[in-house]
Amino acid sequence: MNAYRFAWTCSGMGHVYFKVFDGQQQAEMEYASIHSLEPYYMQHLNEQGRQDAPHGVNLLRYHHSHKPVSQDLLDAFNAWRLAEHLKSWAHLEANPARYGVIAADDPLRQSPEVLRGGWYVVGRGWVETATPHHASNQDSAA
Image (cartoon, rainbow, N blue to C red; front, side):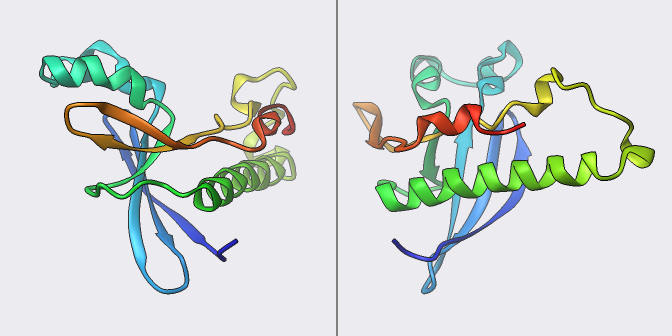
């Protein structure tokens, strides 16, 4: 497995963007969250885009590339996202005077969605190229 490094860059229009560095080169990646299917965002897509959009939700892909996402990259990314989520919660809970006491059942405590890997093929749509090995990560936080 490669020693990937990831960094969040921005979010907008229901998409989340990251940089990934594999030790040799840097690339930009993204995934569409469920929020990308909200009517405000969907109205900006053409008919084909509206048909394809639901299949691209929670699908990690290279930004502006037709390169498929490898299994080791997907596994590393999902592990990194979960670790970042747990680190953020540890910080919040360690500072109740600043952030307050957050209820045990607060929906924000849920682990991030475990993503699949894929790419877009013109004429075919979204194609899954890697599946999560550890779907149980979903319940391991909090």
